[in-house]
Structures are given as C-alpha cells and as structure tokens.
Length: 263
Image (tube, rainbow, N blue to C red; front, side):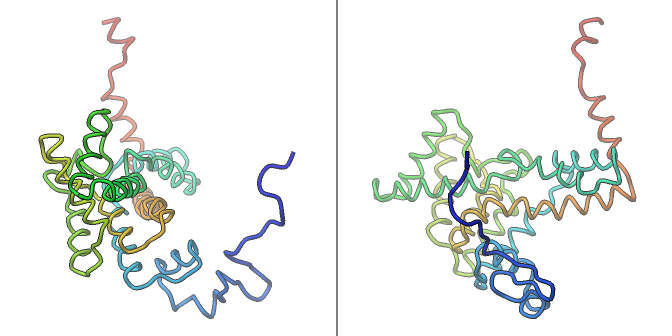
C-alpha cells in the first residue's frame, strides 16, 4: 500500500554533486558563501527566495530575543542529558529542543493564529477593539489562556516584547498585526481585570507577520534560536558542570509520597 502522493519524488532545496553544491538554484560556494548572512541563508533555504531588508532585520531581532533565557526547563534537560553522556552533544541538544513547546518558547505560532482570528473578525464587527474583546472574552469564558499574554517572570512588561514592538513602529513596519496585538493587550486587561503583559511570543508573531514572514518560519524560528542558546549552555557544561547538581536539587525539592505517608 502506497502512502503519500503519487508521482516522482523531488526536492527543490539542494543538490550536492562531485564539484559543486546547488542551494535553491544558487551555487553554494560562489553565490552564497561569504555573500549572505546565516539569517538570509535560512530564509532562502525555507522559502526559496532572499529576504528583503525588513524581513532580515526582524528575523535577526527575533533570533537574538529568544536564543537565551536562563536555566529554562529545556536548558536543564540539555545539561542533565550532557552530564549523563558527554560524548553525545547532539543528544543533549535534541533533549533541549524537545522541551520547546507551546507553554515555553513555542507559542509564536499560536499567537499568529490569534492575530489572524482578531483581524478576521474586524470585517464582521467593523471594530478592532470589539474584535479583540470578543476573542479575549471567549478565551476567558472557556478558561483558556490567551496566547502571547502574561509571563511568570516579566512583570509589568516583557522588555523583549516592548523592544520589538517599538522597533516595528520606529522602522515603519507596524501594521495590522501590531495593531491587533496592541488591541489584544488592552482587551486582556479589561476582560481579566488586570494587566497581562504582552510577551515576546506575541511580539514575534505580530512583527514578523507584518514583515510578511511566512507562517512556517514564525513557527520554526524559536527552535532555531534556542538551539544556539542550548549549544552555549553545553559548552559551559563542559567547563563548569552543573547537570548533576540540577538533578540533585530537583530530587531534594520534591516530597516523595510514600516516604511522607511512612513518617
């Protein structure tokens, strides 16, 4: 039984031959190496076209914003995995990447969908404010978190989000997506009866959407960014190991039910 689409298998990304490598129709050695940045190359790889200057700038901005955020769960998983097997650097990186989910780091795609939802409702209500309020109320009534709002650490604002939104306005990129994110911030404060800071995931989604970065890249970008941070932590783990220390502190902090009952 054949699974998948019929027809010849093909790829448009790259071909490696004995004397040259072609990437998206360009000679890797002569057309790309020494001529484009990694961010530009990443965009070309994923989309088949070069980014414009605005896309390059805001992709770079997002990558820098979320590459590192301290001893997050994904970092701890990576460092403890490396401590268990220092020979498997790739396994430790993979362990950290697997911890990049919708709760931590990977909410930008959900935020993009939320912005899509708000903007789709504007044509019905005729008001951005009312559209944002409707979305916020639905999430509140369903007891669902509002993606892109609130942060356990950054209060009353997420400085990364503030900087991204400010640069979007400064560079004339801010459009309907930034407006929707701003309206959602105000709607969330009204519906929850308290300020919910916009976090970096919403800022990434809004600014990149206004820069016309494809949805697939918005979803994948946090993984690429955090991989750089994980590698930095693993290089430090080689010199000043804390992986087993993190594991021991976790063990100490958790009460074991059977022991508690026995006491």
